[in-house]
Length: 400
Picture (cartoon, rainbow, N blue to C red):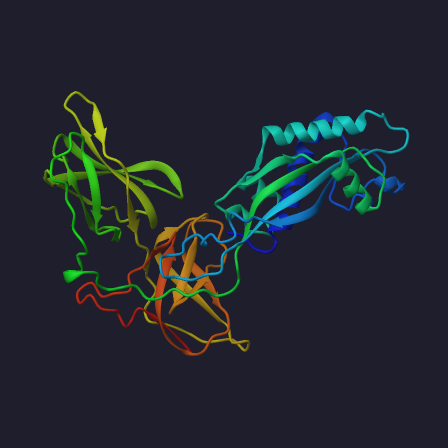
């Protein structure tokens, strides 16, 4: 998750990270991000002194990410893939006339040592140095690796830059994912799959010697509801359920549970359980204090729109509509939040702390009544009436 300012964010963060490290070796060094012909080429008092320049000289499209579905895309949905870029940087050292001739080597050595010890740009570095971009929310890290340029390639590079050679080293920053601004399509969900909506059923013919967790029902649950975890060998000890959030991390959530049978365990989700995807295991404690755990399965906890429904919003003179939506439980920074208006996904405005109030800006679109879903980390709020199993007509937004 990042925007078109991601390139500038990588440059600013790289300059900040290198500046902090290099100044410990060469106090007073300046960090610049200019064309190498201009960096260190002036003889004014302001530009005097040692400097390390960071210059983005080439960008490539990452072919491995080019056709990868965007994060949070469900089967049957269509969205433009993110623009995946590899950025190529040239780090060059410049000194004033009369400075120690070994000073460039000290600058480049300090820079390479810093990137060797810190080979990726962390989210807190990106947030601190480039708060104008949301690149820090990108789940894939931006990794820095040296680029091995031959003497001929380095000669051609400096010749094309129009200046005399200075001691330099090349690095690659990969991958930077820029989200597409083209609207996607998110069709309404299928209400029933198979007779009675139960879908296909499968069961092992013999009990496994180790507890096995096969399925979680329902696979998408609301906070405060019961879930049934089915498998085999689930009654051979004191049973509990352990949940871990796959995005937010943090300590596991342990829920008391009861074994209905050897093949089913029931647990009640907490009311404040965060929305998104959780990894769930069944834990069986032995009498001597040992425990056995099943393999993990995924449990999706659905957000809930708590604003009065249906929502009504008017378009501004430019045809855009700004929607304010309240939800429970609160969402946290780092979670991917979208509002599905009909079949169109709209990203939430950036937020920096846990919040239960979200804002969405829907670009120009026609008036009408559209089904409404809130999606947090790929998990949608319910769109159907729990009693009838049909679409709830009130779960909608009316755009005038």
